Length: 412
Image (cartoon, rainbow, N blue to C red; front, side, top):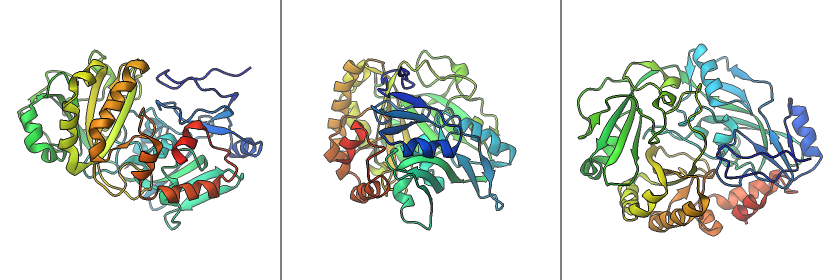
């Protein structure tokens, strides 16, 4: 009998015949050799059907944990099932760090990389940008190892699970560092209009949060090494800890006291030891060129009543450019608008389409793992190297072992 498995939010129940939890790379290879369709399920923190399949699902959570620091201490090799929170603790013990993290430390490294997940910071590229090596079992059952000397790596890193099952990754690391985190309330719209680039650059990582019930932003979260005092662009220091989503307990959030702390306890918004929410939400996100950041905010402001009617919170972040073919930040510094919606698909989808309509003149690129309604042809046109990616998929998965309905629509 098939096992009922849903994503983290519960809005997608996977149609898989079986769920496999291999404990070795050899078991992964055997599963692929038995034929498809086959898709990999990471930590389940996707909101569309990219991981769905009518065949079998594979979870890599049972693979032996690997955290192998290179002799030069400039990179670390990890297994395909490790989560960022667990990796961060292991790196901190070695006196090392990643350049950035996502909001959630609970997500898997391989899944986050495959979808170009990111944090914030005008000088920080997304999480996939530090992948210097990729190991995966392709559709022919072969173990493929790519590094930066191989031109395929730039296409394979943000791979949407289309090339194979990622069993290991090598990531750039740097010496461990400390940061402070501050939260400010009520960021005036006039400040955003007049100083958005300066605001987003005023810290190692900066996020603005708004519920779109007004034009001001509700909060700003700043992660930086330097101490702060007084107001910030007209916003006042918060009088206590905050959670990004209104009504959620602040104890789930990382320290906001302004005290120095290890990088992995400040860069995520949420603490590893707590579930950040009950998953009763849907999410969407679109990336625009950083130079169009204010125009994107203005566009959403023009429909803010509709947006606010189904919104929990919207986060505005900055991401540096990279060279990964299917990254939303490919060759452009970006501003991303992330929407945490209520858990009502029927009510949310028309608003998603309306957000895409008003953002369309700004050439938005959606986050691959979240909810969007953009036509596949428009998606393909947004990526200059998309044809090259299609060729890559045909080469590494000639029989379509890793295809599903979602991927077929994207790839054409």
